Length: 391
Length: 140
Image 1: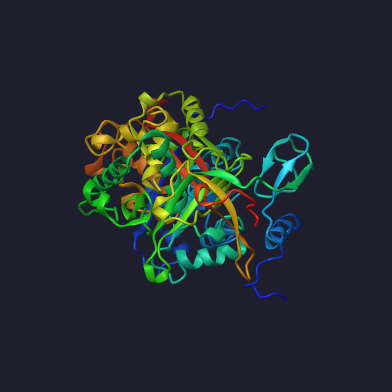
Image 2: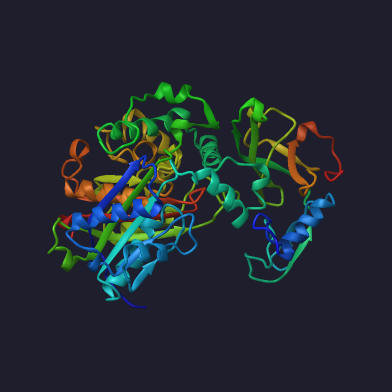
């Protein structure tokens, strides 16, 4: 087996977003392209520098081709794996290997969605998908997915570990408090625990506040080898590790509804990065639903299994708490254009660069990103990023 | 040529399962090689990688492994239950518990399988709390 030490050998050198929230009239390609444009400007690069592409989409069967054509690039490395919203984190390791083996020199990871304002949005795509990719064994029961699947995970966690709706509400309120510090966040209004608890149920035990936003938005970032990154415009943010685990598709085939694939990807990523949980200054967890944050904190090792609810009590992950989690406001309050992985990565980079304004975690040197994909934590991908102090 | 709105023809294993369901039988698979049960239906055993699966009729009893009430406006049909049921054979499936109000479905509740006629679609496997059912043939 090839023994390749990839820790810190590849960096993120540019990040960009576009149309986060509502972007009426813009296509998914346009949102992706404008986010990519902003990432290129951020890095001080042009499209001519891009010879690697990582992207995914929920409508097109051969999406990398759409992107290649729109941007007019001819990449020698393409990563089009779609395992849900974790994809844009899971793309990192294949891209790192491609960069380090000389297959390419600059990889653009990019995504765009207009699911909120498009005339062919979430609902229409769901209907088309049920013909192209039916689930004959779940569909007769009409789960309102993804909420229902994650709701059953939450219900099981509450049953086994005494987690409460108030614990779930703590996650939603913490995300909102971070969002209030982020001018880019879509939902910045006041929110307290009682409002969450009294809100109308969608799929028990979830109210609307336990569920991520449905927004438009584009997100992109650029990766190069670290030796080259040092000559670019912004200070490089080093990828110390990336590990992915993929366990199932439907919640009915999930082995234990309280244990996610992060139990595999998390410890592997920490080990490869040579850090422990105590070294992590800021955490970005793909919070598709409030329960995701609790499950990830447990499976990544921030607290023992079953203690996630108690861990988040009393604003522990909110601004001023013991662990800064989802400092942009997360999928719950900042932005959630269907697949969120790129946005978690972008926020981690902004924090490590010290560009996060009012929500900046002072002195953050090491960040953990945890992606989630599929309708029931089907795939998860964990990365550790660091500044040059962590090398 | 089929219209693009016509679902594709199903693979034989799934077709067999649905044909049995149409005839009022819910069958799962049992591996004659490693003696595990399997659901949903597949071509070979994913536990021992042998082509040794036979159709068997489960006892029809199990428990609610997890559950949610999907909220829906009354004029659209009202709230309904979605549950994951674990059969005593050890396999799980998504289903719905009927016969009680959705909010009264609880994790751990013992349930018994019933086949619900659903024309023209294939019949549907649903569950009712064991305490509400007379002992006997769940395929009755």
